[in-house]
Length: 248
Length: 257
Image (tube, rainbow over the protein chains, first blue to last red):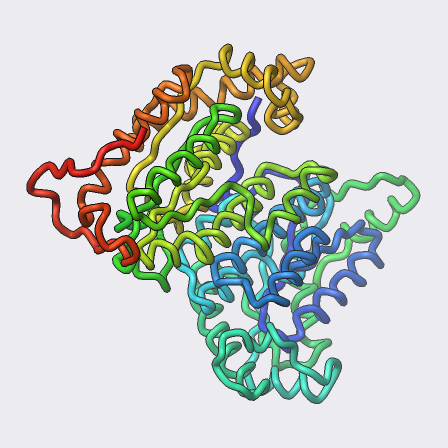
């Protein structure tokens, strides 16, 4: 009656593939994942995309909690785990089981890093997320804090967000300074995680195209034996072409 | 004081600061927990103890979310358990821990063991849910109101009737509400019985008349009160910590029944 228990410690048994990206805000990981998605789609691969902290149920509660400043490190952590569980169940597992490709912008490592910085026990967070599916590929976009700040302030977003800057932690009254302190601690946690879980480290200071080429190269190597499944027949030819194409 | 943490604990709260007493009343739906908790509160307050009661899913942060979840989106096992864990953590940190710190007696209507039973029935896995609740404060006493599933079914039908969740309808265990209720509650009771041994619950037969159950509960609670000060005196100061075991049996207070 009960399904076999999946754990984070071992590779998942499903025919699909899960590729995730990690990194602090301003590392460019979302841009890279978007470009990867474009590339895969152009080759006729059906790609499912999922983001951290995006389910309706939990977003509402997080908003309520933020408003009343009622979230503690533990409830913050649990809420995100709930959100993740719901996405895993609804968005990630079905395509993986059906043999499709899932791309995730941030994964459990985000929780491992952030929650530890916010003050919960690192071993507790890891145990709590033991129900997660181990990704087939995990990229970490490593960037020095100053470059991340420069990108966030100067470029696409022009403003640092309250929680991303860890303003609720009272590290500094100044938004930029708080971001620097908070995200520096997160970088230190990521360093540990990269070693612990063997994430693929990408140099996020390089040009966008250069990073993307490296990423595509690694992905096509990893997907060499992957047999994608599709619901529609029309684009089969794309697949043959994809399979024949070897990385230069 | 409470006896520490169930697992990894909260890194930012020292359990030694919690000088109150935490008493959990466990048992399946419909065994009369809330009635007995009301009576216990009255009994303790008459003796001069400060009492705080806390229920399952009553936190301001989460109760709405859980209601919404129950109404529409049938949740997977993890979300289901994590939602309850979040609710519990909210109450633990905003209600239970502050009360214990101030020396109150906290009467908990259900505690983490309810979450354990529900998750195990759904998953067959005991480890994960216990890890999740590793931040919990261990109770000083767990009283388990035990009932057999046949008596329980009769009682529930006589009072409020069976509902979807109490019948575990999400598990599809039986063809209708009654079959499902009996199977689901039967599994819960089985799991509670196992935990009663593992975690040394005080087991109280909930098929007895209410007066007898209440009397039994009070008998179980008295020993953990004895470690504190004499009742009836200085009614408003907080309960002192109880690092020392009682050297003698202080029986100066008796049941008000």
